[in-house]
Image (cartoon, rainbow, N blue to C red):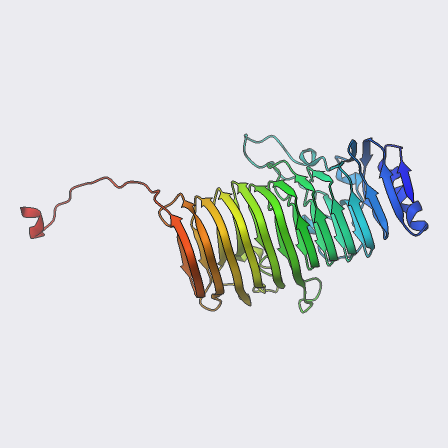
Amino acid sequence: MDHIVSEKSGAAIQGAINEAAARGGGRVVLEPGVYTSGTICLRSNIELHIPAGAKIQGADTPEAYDDFPHPCGVYPENGKKVLLACADAENVSVTGKGEINGAGPAFYDTNVPPGHFFLKPPHPRPRMVQFHNCRNVLFEGVSFVDSPGWTFFISECEDVNISRIRVDGCQQMINNDGIDIDSCKRVAISDSFFRTGDDCIILRAIRKGDKNTSAVCEGVVVTNCVLDSWCQGIRIGCTSDDTIRNARFDNIVFKGRGTGILFEYPMRYVRKNCEGYINVSDISFNHISIDAGRHPIRISCDPEIKSRRIAGITFSNIRLRGTLPLHFCGTPPLPLEDITLRDIAGEIESDTPLVARYVLRHRMENVSLTATTGEPVPFVRQESPSWETHF
């Protein structure tokens, strides 16, 4: 049953969602127009349909938003406020050709030189979408514009399908990640566009509560997407995360001033009472085009980190350009394992095309890289006792 919303307010949308849920579920359909809104909570068996011409306009002050309605234990950027929230639900959809707008620049100090990041405010900024412990989730067709914080934070969910969406954030906003997939199983992201100031697509496995609590992110497939970031196109994990495994990225185009694909585990991301914990395995990247302002591909771990394993990473059919080398660097106690480069070609605007240290079984097949850029060294004659200089 369709529940039509004509009153242009978030409260009216929430009322229609509550009414549909009370009847066992249904489709909440917005009429064209702008709906100014604070937090909207989705519930089981609800489809929120935002057609072309309809826009949910998020409020431009944090006080207009509620805290996320679940003690999930993780609050990125120390913020609990969310525009579109859902917890402990199943069969939830957000569809249509319309827009959700987070009014992102209103939450920053925008008085900065052109091309610089806006300054973050002292108070936390809301996220646009947060789902926790949900099953059978669909996002399809909608544009998500100018989230003040992370655009999507999907945690501990299963069977998530994200298709034909557009994430478009002002690139002067820092921490406006595209999609953070945390400790989820069976996630498909396809046919979508991402423009962000921060990372576009991120896989995480954040341990919550007790340090012995495990977290696993697995079965993620990303296909046919276009990425544009001032930071990273794709990021795999942070230093104190748990296990990220069995993920595929196929037919991806990245162009931006950041790094294309990043596995980086530095000291600055180590949680308290932790020395590093990340365990990454069986991640593949195939048919990827990278035009990066920094490294096209970088895998690195600070030498002090006690992470467990970084293994089984495959890159195939990659065309690339960057200003810094391809970088594959483990540590003596934690060498990278089974790193495969197959059918790789491109140009590095540097004097070094590739750096590799502490790698076990680094396979390279049909790799063609060019690196010819460097500062010329002028000839300066020096006095020398060598007999070679006397004739």
